[in-house]
Amino acid sequence: MISKDTLDKLSENHPEVFTIIAYRHWSKAHSSFGEKLPTFVNPVTHRIHPNVNQMRAASGRFSFSNPNLQQIPRERQYRSCFVPAPGYKLIIADYSQIELRIAAEIANDSVMIDAYCNEKDLHRLTASLVSGKPLDEVTKQERQLGKAVNFGLIYGMGTTKLRIYAETNYGVKMSFEEAQRFRENFFKGYPGLYQWHQDTAFKLRTTKVKDIRTLSGRLRRWKDEPPLTSLLNTPVQGTSADITKLALHKLNSALDELGGFPIVVVHDEIVLEVPEYHVVEGSAMLEEAMISAGKRFLKSVPVVVEAAIAESWAEK
Image: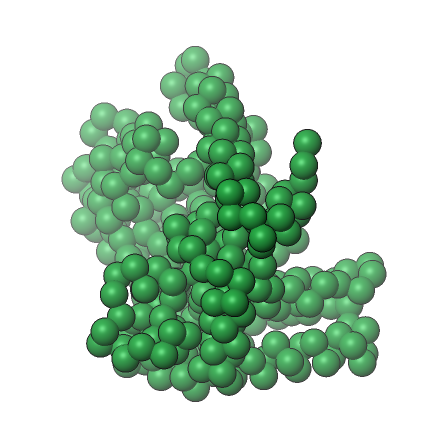
């Protein structure tokens, strides 16, 4: 079977290869979740009880196994299958662009910090910066472009991988030349982010650095020389993991009093199951805990949490 890396390279000159990449994506989703998930349902509790791993992921994020609920596709046909018990509701909350906010904090990028402090839409701003189009003329589709570029480039993704990432995750098609131009304009538009990337790359070349810390001070160390992308990724995703775990700690005793409990954590998203008569209180409690945890480490940018009360996991 042709490897994903080979397909990625082929797609540069053969757009039809994207069809194979998309087919593999959906085929894996069906075999991993559509067919296998029902086999994990406990016959007594009628629930799925995965293994929850605190520190197996190198970034410090939670990981799940048997099954990996974090990989449940976001499409409604999958997530609508997850519902609360009778008399309960789900509270689903996630951080708004937490990784971009953390990157802005670490890089001390004045453009990003100003955007967040003044409640600007960073995806629209990025679309404007990379395309050269006035901010007020950016369309909804072009905002998707900004979103793909933001999440693709904060960790130093190359031009070819940006093309694959944008189409696979956001439905945004771009030529190699466009991707190259967007990448150049992105780092011109965010000079602090560019300097952070350059400084990290210089440190890697000159000192052969083999460790890095999150904003909480948690250390990740490599046996051999790490890739640049990992040195950029770890402080951001690692800090996000630290914030999420601190939020859960803050929730612990208060949530017990409401008769609620966490259902699943997917990176920066926390899902609770709470009795119906406590959902409003529980929602406010969850938002407060998450914002408080974020403020512990982010001093230059505001922390924003978006929460929803739902009948299924698909409703957020």
